[in-house]
Length: 274
Image (cartoon, rainbow, N blue to C red; front, side):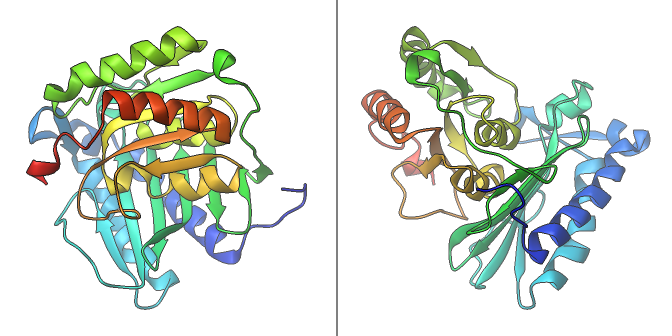
């Protein structure tokens, strides 16, 4: 993407709303109200709920007839042509512990495909955004994936925190990639890790079990930055269930990573639970 390329008005409006929502993350009382959901590693705070409500009040007006799917709330298949897919605070555990690596992720799916995305890390005031056909940007600066080969790549990954029955397969993938690449990063915020791949800071990504709100914003950002991202063993981009995700900076690295993952994880191991 050439210098001076301008994002569409929609992406700019999305970014303004997300930055407005981020101010709620600074409210200490909202942050300190913590509940567990599902298991001992999955949390929700009043800040998560407040951010999602803020977004739900403003995003649909940008695209008439659109609907919203948020992490905090009812999860169901939506039929609208335009669907907002929102993670109000990705990396809630980091947020609670004041680690300083959490973000707001807002993706727009159009006709069943990720179309536009905004991911904001308020701790570093870094806002990633993209819209299909308009390029990818970090704070208004065009970004592109790196050209590092597999041997010099950094992998971002995780060990399936919310269902540790699949940790062994994750470790097998991580071990094989680690032995062939440069290094590993585990940061605890999927959307920001994927965004960093788009910005050329890391080159490889694998996670066994992501949800739509973890990746919907990141996919158009990665693709517009020249990278590749895929939901494994899926027909398109599901909005009603989890799925494995791989991404890479180049086609060669993507195919090499995919071969390793598919050998260790030949199918979705939790398919019978979907």
